[in-house]
Amino acid sequence: MAWRRRRTLRPCRIGRARGGETQVVRSRGSHGDSAAPTSKEDPGFLRPRSVDRLTRPCRRQNEVVDSGYTLRGAESVRMKRALITGPAISEGRVAELRNLGFDVINGTSSALAALSVPQSEHSRDLSETEMISLLNETEIYIYGGLEVASGRVLEHSKNLKLIAFLGTGWSDEGCVDAAAAKSLRISVANTPGANAPSVAEVTMGILLALQRQIVELSNKSKRGTGRPVRLKDIAGKTLGIVGLGQIGSRVARHAVMGFGMKVIYTGPHEKPQLENELGLRRAPLAKVLAESDFVTLHCPARSTVGLIGAKELALMKPSAFLLNLSSPEIVDGHALVDALESGRLAGAGFDGWYKEPASLHRRFLAIDDAKLIVLPRTAWLTDDSYDRMTNIAFANIHAKLNGMPLPNQVNP
Image (cartoon, rainbow, N blue to C red; front, top):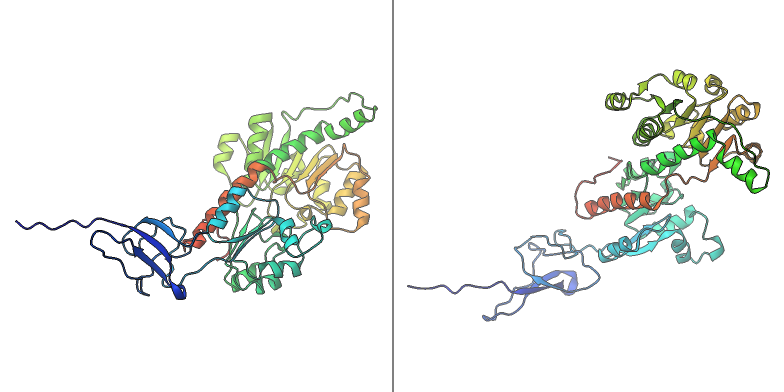
């Protein structure tokens, strides 16, 4: 009987041949055979990590393995730069980008330093000129700052493939020029729901602080003038929610299950499941404003600018409080300060400052802490929220690099 000698699988080296072609070379075995360099029809493994040669068992032709290479036909594409703006992401995520072959510019301060901007100016946002310079060689842009990716900026970003926006409202306030991104075939992906728990918590915190005058009483106590004040509970009161999306839904749960409040809401879509679970009631905006002891806004900024003006504020109870955790421009600033100064509204709280003349700011600053709480656009920013956002952003990045559909792409 004739026996055939079994050929064993040998380790191989994965590297780049001269001229940029990728080759897979099998280590010589007992028969002295070796694999020839791959041809254009046999592209092999592409996209190197930080090392040029890796050693691992050979696989079947065209099988993709976790070697840091992506199968891209016969062409080897090495990502040049990843830009990260806003608060720094974790070192582990930065290392992940570098292992994928990126040169990483991490954070606004790092970006400004790379442009030789003096240290004293590192707290400001990136200008359009600086954005053009930084995005010129960038392929992946993790957008977590307050800069603007304008049409002019994107037109100069010849290598940009993906904007991974850390947040939801990517087109609000002109953060990203949607038309330019679409025409230039730049994918944009956001991180829906990642900051909802954080914003919902701050919403309830502001509500409690206004109802119980926590900030005002704390400041007076520190000055030695604090006295006990008889106030009211929030249990049993009515909370009106404008926009029952992911944030509004969480606020409703906190209010009903945590504080025993009644909730009515308005929005473009009915939420029968939440209505049954929490006893919510849907109503027109005018009815929500008129019946609520607290009104909180959680609606998209761009489509609701000027939603609440003098007419709408006049519908609210004089004892009511208005909370705006979306964008300041949803509420007419002049009408709001008039209502607070006249006593037509008990108080207000919002996250983010009006882009208005200094005269309006001075009027707001003159209002007592018991009636007004303002935060510096920080409700969304926690360590946990940022981790959730970067996890979603990196899922989008990996999908883009591997030619897969993006889980959270927001532009067609």
